[in-house]
Length: 77
Image (tube, rainbow, N blue to C red; front, side):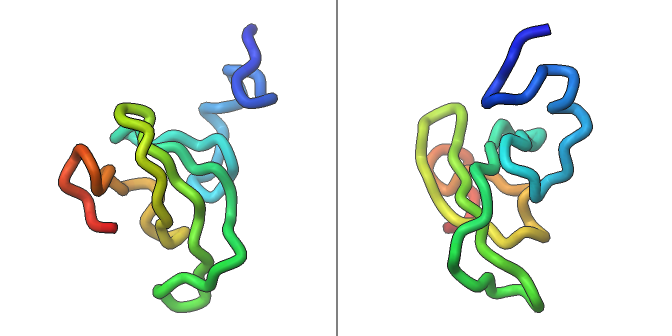
C-alpha cells in the first residue's frame, strides 16, 4: 500500500473526522487542530484545506465531516 501524509492508504478509511489527514465527502482535508477555540460548545477550530482549489480555512471539530469549501463550493467561512 502507498503512503499518504505519513499514513498507509488503508488507514485513511479508519480516521475520525478530527484526525489529521481525514478527507470528507466534499474533498476537504483536516490538517490538524489549531490553537484557536471554536464557536461550538467545547470545540476547537481545525485547519482545513480544499483539495479542489487549495483554499485554507477553519472549521469546528463537529463540522469537519460535512464542510464545503467557502471559496469554490459555497460553504461558510
